[in-house]
Amino acid sequence: MKWIIAYVAAGLSFGALDALWLRWAGPNFYRPAIGELLADNFRLAPAIVFYLLYIAAIVWFAVRTGHAHGGIGVAVLNGALLGAICYATYDLTNQATMKVWPIHVTLIDIAWGAFATAVAAAVGCWAAVKFA
Image (cartoon, rainbow, N blue to C red; front, side, top):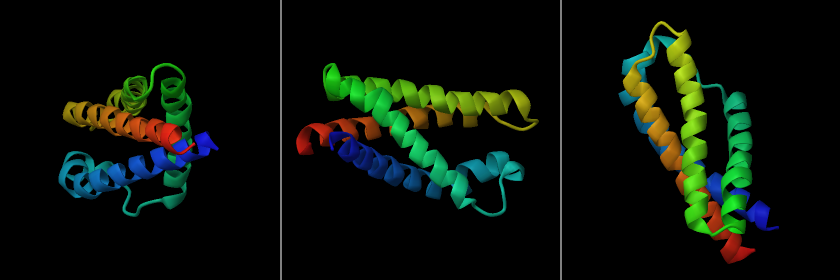
């Protein structure tokens, strides 16, 4: 039960943060920098698959480890590392393979991934301890 609680808590926190970020960053950050690469319409199915899998990764690699080995601080560190690595994989691959992918998009995305994943891991770990 504690991992379901952690999954829901991490998912809600990551989803809320990412919704706020994307609502602002879409028109103000991504569209000016890489607008010609963006789809005209949002595709819900791939987004759902991403969030389901990514939240599971947060729980497995950050929350579970934090819960077993020292608490929220360990979860935050592992979440930040996971987020930075995952977002770096995406952004650096795009930067390596696309004609247009500015370095500032890569750097800000990696920082965002580290921050949002660390927060979600902290919330998930806290919820697993508090409510399970």
